[in-house]
Length: 207
Image (cartoon, rainbow, N blue to C red; front, side, top):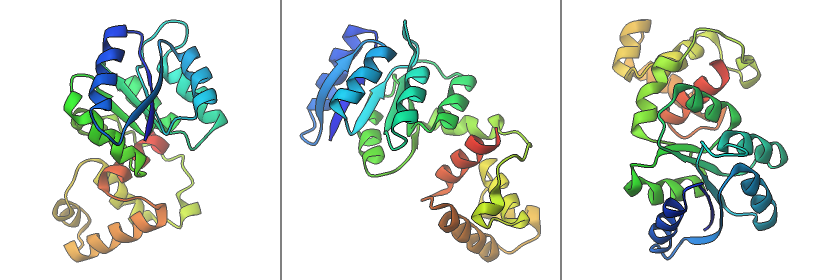
């Protein structure tokens, strides 16, 4: 797994490189200090994952993510920041970043990289806990394109609010088995793996 590190703090970049290369499956293929370098280095190095800070001079990580993803929608970008900022989280989701982690959680970085490399979307526990409060009630996404009916959309919205199957069943006057069947069908239709990805998908398209 080839990882490109972008951070404006040299000491953090050095520490990340040391941490990551302690794992034999990870190779740090390059590093840079701002979004402009991220775009240039991504184009030249084609890393498997771009591990990038958000707040940087010249071009921030979100602007760089937007430019890179416009060129390569399959880019795996994992944002690493000290800021638990609602606006940043929403923008990251909308852009299509594959993850958003806090720098304080160093122990979670390698597992997160491996998860992203395997095709998963990764958001730290602190971010996941904030998702329900970031949701809006506006419906703008063409769910019918994915053959998602009104009842299924109700289930999705409740999952995104953090409800369990039992709570959803009680809320919609359904059996837990029916809720499980709805959820299984929804994940299949949207090609998602789990409830967390479903909540992220809902926020990305409805916030």
